Structures are given as structure tokens and as C-alpha cells.
Image (cartoon, rainbow over all chains, first blue to last red; front, side, top):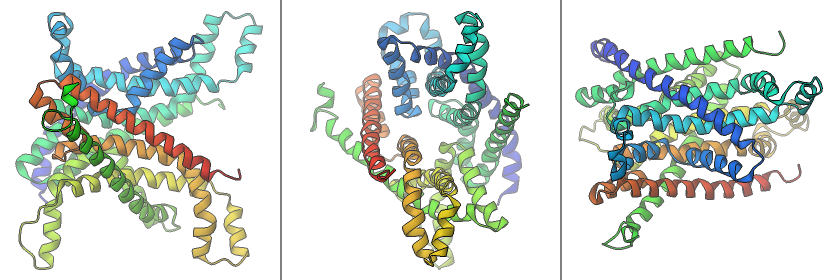
Length: 225
Length: 230
């Protein structure tokens, strides 16, 4: 055990954690809206809209995240037309490519989580709202969404942790996130175990925090208060 | 389309073998995972606190740390660890483990943590009366497990195990960083030499979709088979 290495690499890894957290929060933020949007499409009665939303979530859940990042980072740059548009400003940056890939990925999972949450809402609750003369829009925003959020909290907590682990793939497109820096230190010092303990410890700490925040929210929004 | 031709001109046969490699690694990793689950599930369900702790440590650490980091640990630390063990037995030559073994071990340990959780959940949801009835009938511990608990557990575990299989299948793409030529690595090589990454990575995505689709169909059949009588 090389404790000196563990101590000296800790600040470097902690610095890289900032990038990991930035990637995570950005993709979760955009992914939540995307997921909500596609969950609503999934509930639409029009079969084409429905199938379109299903196809989106099927493709992004059925392929590895690594493929998705590579298609966006290496693949899209190949299209000559894209290089002339303003989109190229975003797509040439690995940072934004990673965020786009993560957003699309987490959006697919989130849409599934929210869809199943919407579907488990008892029809009686919506009927009760209707019989009280509340408009459909308000039923959706004030009754369905709050219940769906509560229902999907445990599954969404898992998704946040999965996404946190997913951000490690940013290191494959040259970003120096926590895993990227860990790999760099390992490949220069050849001390994989020490670095793994420190980097893994930081990841576990984040998992622990996320887990407890979700648990707290679950308690706060539980029906039996 | 000529990019996918078989033979020397295209990448068809290379990608075909790469797909077989992905399937081979996934199955090996899944089996390695079952082996780990077989060790750690009893630990998690044990009466003894210390054994519980060991079981929980395994599943918590592996499920809380990115897959890529575990793969780097095995990739850079694997031969070192084997050489250390060998040196105890008096063997000091350099040992190199091939990428297939490193990869399936790393993915196997990850998949094992998920399988452990699935088995634990399945065993815990079996009615307590089943254990008691078996005991009352005088069936020995071995028979209790294989004839009564296991068949019921499998029925409950198959839907969740199919999720573990999907995760494992997708995780194998990460082994490409160690140089094992599976779908992702082959696409990387092909994309590099033809300068057509969009086509090859999209094709890799199609291959993965195909694999997940076919395996879902097969698992559904298994599910039907094991839920006979319910």
C-alpha cells in the first residue's frame, strides 16, 4: 500500500469530481424535461406519436451508452453540413457531446419511469378531480404530476446513481472527469489498487449522499404523514 | 453497403466475429456473476452480522462505483495480482492474462453484484411456510434448497435476471478500452481505417439492439416455461 500516493492523488481526484458533478447535474436537468416530454407522448392516444416515443426509449435503452457517445462525438462530425451550422460550435466540444449523449440516455430511462408512474395513478383520483369540475390541465399539473413524482422517486433515485456511474464514460472522449484522472494516475504510477480505493471512495460517497437525499424526499412526500 | 462485405474488401466478417466475441464475453461474465452470486447471496442472508457485512460490502461497492473504474482496476492490476500470488508459490516470471479473461472477470464481478441482489430478493419473497413445510416433511437441507427453494426462486428471479443480462451485455462494450476485439472495438478499428465513424458506430448500435431484442424474446420463453402452474 502506497499511502503517500493516495494522499497526493486525493486533491487531484477531488478536482476532477467537479467535472463529474457538472456533467451529472447538467444531464439530469435536461434529461428530466426530455423524459417528461416523452412520457407525455407515450400516454398520447395517437399511435404514431406513441410509437415514436416508444422507439426513442427502446433505442436508447437497448444500446450501450458508449456507442451513443461515440456516435455523437465521432459520428456527427462527419456530416459536412453540420460543420457549417452553428450546431458545430457545440458538437466540436467533447464536453457538450457528452452532455447531449447523457441527456438523451437518461431521458429515455426517465420517460419510462414517469410513464409507469402516470399509469399507476388510480383512475378514481382523476375522476374525482373531473367531478369536482377541475379542468384537465389543472388535473394534470396539480394532481397527476405531484403523484407521479412521488411514485417515481425510488426508481428515479436509482437512475441518478446509474447516471453518475455513466458519466465515467466521458473519459473515453478525452474529458478529464474523476475516472479519466484516475486512469491517468494509474497508467503513470502503475498503482491501480491505491487509486481505485480513493476514486472509488469518492464515487461511493456521492452514491451515499444521493441515496440519502432520495430517502429523505421519499419520506417527505409520502402519503402517510 | 460494400463496407459490410465479407472477405478482404469489407468489414462484414470482422464484425460478425466481433459480435460472437461480445456474446461469448457476456455469457462468460454472466456465469462468473452467478458464481459470485452463489457465494455472496448466502452471506447476505446469513444470521451472522460479520458475514452480512461482507456481502453488503461487495454489492454496495460494486454497484456504487462506475464499471469503467472496475475494468481499469482489473486491466492494470490483474496481472500484478496474479504475479503476486504466483510469487508466493515461487514463480517469478512475468505473467500476462489475456484480455478475454480480464474482461469477463471484471464484467462478471459487476454482474455478480446485481445477480446477488436479485437472488436475495427472490429468496426473501418466498413464503416462510415453504421452508417450514420442507423441514416438517423431514427433507434434508440439500433437498430443501434444490427441490423446493431453487425452482420457486428461479420463477421469481427470471424477470429481474433478464435485466441483469441486458446490463451485462451493454457493459461488455466497455471492455473495448482494454483492446479486446468485440463489437465496439471492431467498430473503432473499422471507423479509424475507413474514416466513416458515423456508419460503423450506428451499425454497432444496430447490432446491440439486435442482441438485446433476440435475448429478450428467448428470456420471455423461459419465463413462460418457469411460470407453468401459476
